[in-house]
Length: 107
Image 1 (cartoon, rainbow, N blue to C red):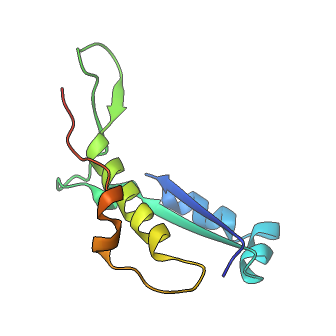
Image 2: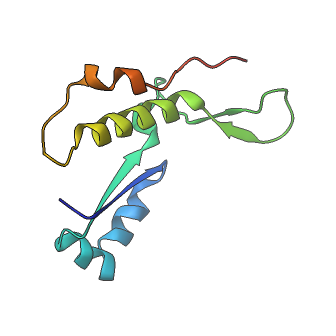
């Protein structure tokens, strides 16, 4: 098991994949010193256009990130991290229920 794990959430995964397959980082991954998981935030959206941004609340210029895709990806990362124990036993999804992040957002 790698000694350090990195989870990167992005809407542009390809540049990261290229960068992490070069030089020192590539060698560290090959030696299993680090593990890098790149999460594409667009994979956790519901709409056909895979939008991750929304208009700012209250109007005005600019855009903000939608919270729903971010909550979904973080829930998946948390469940994966809880599933990995030092003894290597696999936990069930129900074991992590008390740690579940609430997906309700009040406006």
